[in-house]
Image 1 (cartoon, each protein chain N blue to C red):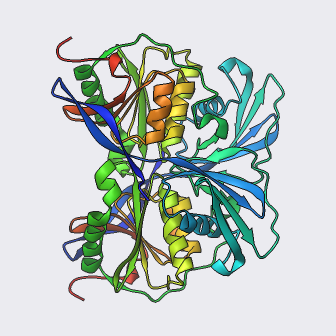
Image 2 (image 1 turned 120 degrees about the horizontal axis):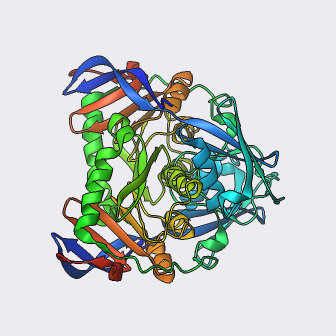
Image 3 (image 1 turned 180 degrees about the horizontal axis):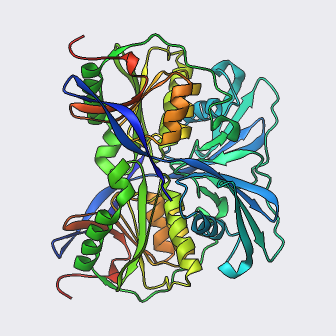
Length: 260
Length: 260
């Protein structure tokens, strides 16, 4: 599905103007109904929406596996009807939108300190050099970013390289798409890394922890709270992974140095 | 107030490691109660919280000016009690958190298409060269970004240069802080530009429109929906404003070219 749109712009350069066409990323609402009751509206890049729905529901604790879902149907491209095998109680959000960048941004306040989360048990180790090589591949594969400059990218990877890559106007949505793909494909997550182009705030860390992925790597930096929670949950947080360098904020025991 | 924290990290560079200290940005919950009823939790950088509260309430349509507020009190640093002069009906959010990057991310779905918003009436014009010069100053003044790399910055500016600058882990919060400052200081907004380091999604555009600021400028790119709404509301959207160049997506009539 095409998720970019060509529009007329004026390019200004050194006081001169030029009319031209340029690509911008699409942003659309996705209205999610669970068991015929309105749940939320995500502002998102409208591709991989089944994966987004599954990842979003998982991140929000509505489902624990794809087996909780009886059926997902889409209507007019912007409504998802999700029927679960169980009854659930849904808070009344009324007609508010969880907006871009923020698609999956709602998390239970109790999770903010990592109190309701399981410690991530994983013996996974990885080579720093290998990780930086994968980061380079990740950058090269982020097509929508290269075309529009207006998205965040996310991928999961392990010993066999990059498995899934998703892009979205929202850094939360991009991660939820990856988690959705992992769930739908029964992909092992305990020996994997999650790469994101976005900053690592507590909610991004919590999503990764809930998915059971032990290593979270970003182009950008983490917040202090994200690092605090990661330590509590036995996770590895890497920031500013660019070129030949990176900062390891916690969980450095998973990282192999030198030529090991 | 100090909003950065020094933590021990390992810097990895070309297969070598070095233990060192580095600054990370603080992320804290801010629990907002309106008329003694719980409204929302923002994950934010804990400075300028009165301004953040005021801007957030304004962006969410709870107040239309600072005069709607009777009193704001803070308790234990992470709770804001806001008493309004009027009674309002508050949706029941329960104990969910609007998380970082997403602090101000909740907007009425009806606003997504700009339908409930007033057209921005402004005769303001600006010189492209002047704007790029201000963007350079903006970059230089973004201290928290330079120290931590983990925040978004925002400022408002006009013919007299940069007025207010705010930084936050969330691009929505940073804008709400600026709007809050404008409201608290009775600052004119109709002949101003708003600069942000973040992407321009529909919600960011809507916040700017609601504040009555006619020109929105970003380091990064807009979504198609943001441009569509901006056209409807008679606003100017500029993206990728870096060095000597920028893209004007709409409202180019406000921009003066050449040496004018």
